[in-house]
Length: 417
Ligand SMILES: Nc1nc2c(c(=O)[nH]1)N[C@H]1C(S)=C(S)[C@@H](COP(=O)(O)OP(=O)(O)OC[C@H]3O[C@@H](n4cnc5c(N)ncnc54)[C@H](O)[C@@H]3O)O[C@H]1N2
Ligand code: MOO
Image (cartoon, rainbow, N blue to C red; front, top):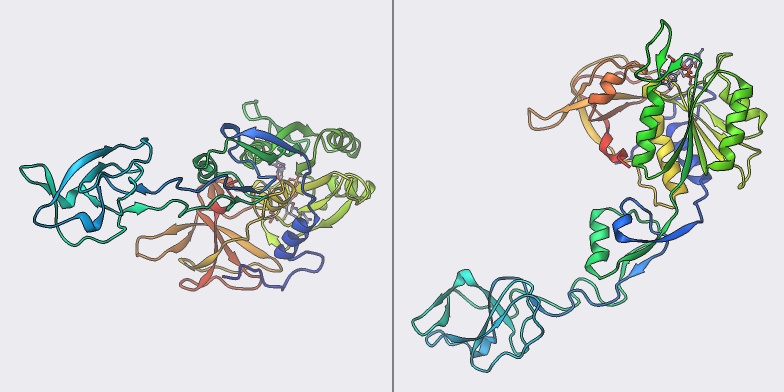
């Protein structure tokens, strides 16, 4: 399905998908690499392609616990004596003429055998000869040498993310060392005089800094090393100082808050003073005041800056749809396309104006097909609905939400790391 947002947007705001493409294009993948062992490799990004060092499986082996035999040796009346026992881990044996081998799953098929019969289809007579129920099919139940990969077959490409299955794939081929990209160092800061830490006593007007807590989690999930610079008060000088420090220690800077248009919002003017603003404003709800730029004049040597809005849900959605693909591209990781599919709305409401709205919804499967219901209040300051949501229902600008009509649904689990 073509996941897009219609073009009827407010002048001055970038289309969400154009902003995403601009970010991916702007990202310069990190060059630094390191060699690590598989036990440290979860979530890392392959810096080099890896090929199979040998055939997999290494030898023809049994897919079943049963009996290995040569089809032409078997006579239904006489059956076959069991002349050999082949457990997993034994070497490749030679099948004794005129008999069969007791064999177990994964054990090498003896030379001279061409078929394995599962033990459920076998009975033993008084002499201990096997008799087979049903037809024999030559070659059955043998996993062939090299049927999965041949020596030299590509296993993983540069840019692939190492998850449990891909790490196991390497392990199954005997590989224990991989060359991966260095973890990204990300400096994180919140801005706002009103912000205090969770756990502190609150005076009226103060706000708990939930965005920095959230972004610490999201950055860790995205396999970044976080340099948490804390809360910076609403002052251009302090912001400049924080950015001066950040660019000496980080590959990327992520900040939250102070990126809208009020005179207490200093992020945009400060980036402009540093000559690094790339864009500001995306036609999305929540998340409109998202900005992207650099801590110095735009060039490949300047440290990129992602400025997320202060409203908590705007910060979350801006991270998921815009910041995360940029981080992935900087990590040298292949960036996945957004996934969406049509889902019917279980409610009606007015549509957004001038930007695409991402409604936080839960899916109700009780009638067999999914129906989206609002997960709670949709204000961009309301984390309750975001914490319950299964996904986002994307509503195009000037489009009514009509109960029973279908809209693009974006599952939230696609943004997990
Ligand atoms: N005149 C206009 N006002 C606003 C516009 C606009 O276009 N014109 N845009 C609105 C939209 S949309 C958003 S989103 C917000 C974003 O504003 P800022 O990025 O400048 O964020 P702040 O003003 O600093 O804070 C907004 C809101 O969020 C709370 N906040 C800030 N940081 C945190 C944090 N780390 N943890 C939890 N909550 C935080 C802050 O206290 C405010 O309540 O601007 C609208 N205004
Ligand atoms: O972009 Mo905002 O998130 O609607 O308050």
